[in-house]
Image (tube, rainbow, N blue to C red; front, side, top):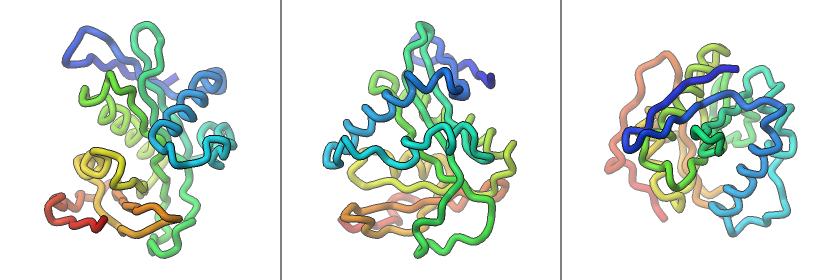
Length: 193
């Protein structure tokens, strides 16, 4: 199991980041589903997205998939992030044939936000992506998710497109691995609401 220790800067609690296994699914999946309900109360909670329905196949068994978890010293799940093969469901993005994954489900427990945990999870995910020879990280987020767009800009992502997807304003972003990041100041990025 791939593990990294992380010391929170504002306390003495240790966080361990590790790869989710089949044995972890019974705690990780309910955590992700509940977090999704809280962030997206406007969505039907009974309709489980495909990536969560096929979690093992896409994240654990998929050639480019992985799902990471962060747990505190007591074993409590406090954050997650995943990546899975990008399915090119947004043809208007004009993504070329580079080996691309979609970064998904970055959720950090409210008590651990602004502690560096989200960045630590993403950095570990990036290491795994490089080990799997991934060339592009793609993600999408929404303006109503406070701080998400700015967080991803700080991680080196840049705007690919901003449009409406199924009734939601959606920010499409990408990061090319192994190449210098395109730095775009958030003030330069005028997102219409």
